[in-house]
Structures are given as C-alpha cells and as structure tokens.
Image 1 (cartoon, rainbow, N blue to C red):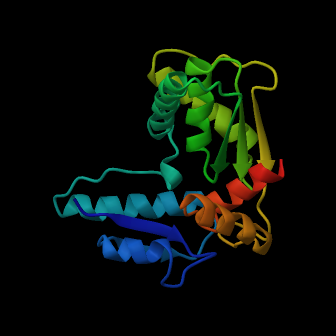
Image 2: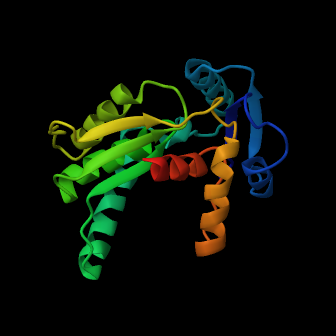
Length: 204
C-alpha cells in the first residue's frame, strides 16, 4: 500500500523530525504552499482521481485523522485506560490531550462520556482553529457511528491554547519540561505538539 502525504508548507519543512521518518517509511511527500485545509483536500481529490485513472483505489485520511471514524480510536483508548486504572485502583479525575486537528480530543470527550462519566476533558490547543466547536461536533459524529448521541453536561469540556508563535513552531520555554520528562521517565515528546501539550498541562 502506497502512502502519499499532502502537507501544508509551513512550520518545519526541512529534512528533520517526522519528515525523516516519512522518508524512512517510503512515503511520497508533497508540499502545498497553503494554510487552508480546503486546498489540501482538493489536492487530495486530484491525486485520487489521477490514481483512479491508473486503476488504483484511494483511501482518504483527513488531516490528523480527524473524522468520526478516526476519533473512535480514542474512544477505545478511554475504554482501555479505564480498565487499566480500575485494575490499578486509580481514580481518574481529568483527561488532557494535545489538540491539533480535533480528532483525538473528540474521541476522548466521547470516551469519557461512555466510560468515565463526570470526568472533564481539556484540549491543549497547538493550533488556532476553533476547537471549541470542532471537537464536540466530531464527538457527536462519532457517537452517531455507535448509534448513539453525545449527551453534553456543563463544563464537561474546555479548550486551553498553548500555541506560542504558531503551529509547528517550538516554544523555547517548553524545552525544560520536555528535557525533564525525558531524563526522569525516558519519555520523548516533540517540541511542536506533545511537548506543548505537556508543558501547557503542567502550567495549569
């Protein structure tokens, strides 16, 4: 199965970080000089049409995997860590995640409703899209796939933004938090997504 990535040409475009991994795994990486998701999706359709003429079938994965189906993976994530927490005698009071396109946080919100009722979900925004609207909408679409609905309650979800100078641009003040976690726990975070979320969470 061939992977073609259509990426926004902003932030980190040098050959480093995830781009090195893309190359190692053999992905066909194509940049677009745009900040608009609509432009990306239009180009994805062009590529898919070209492949169809060659006899291939394409499977669309939206930016961040953020659609109703993709978010279900994080509904299962909540189910899994709920079972682990119960087995360990741990009570969860709050769920925090990085939010860069909305799918992860949407799945966690729906998962919390199903498996951790009463637990609040906080998205740590590393992009400036209106995730207050995007996340609940995605969660509702995922609930519909499960033949249910998203039942909201007051203060069940909030967004906190820790963007800094922009998406994919590291915040120098986050570096000590990233280094501390790596040196104490052996857990590596990247400086533009998980690192921002970790630092932002600690600052809360």
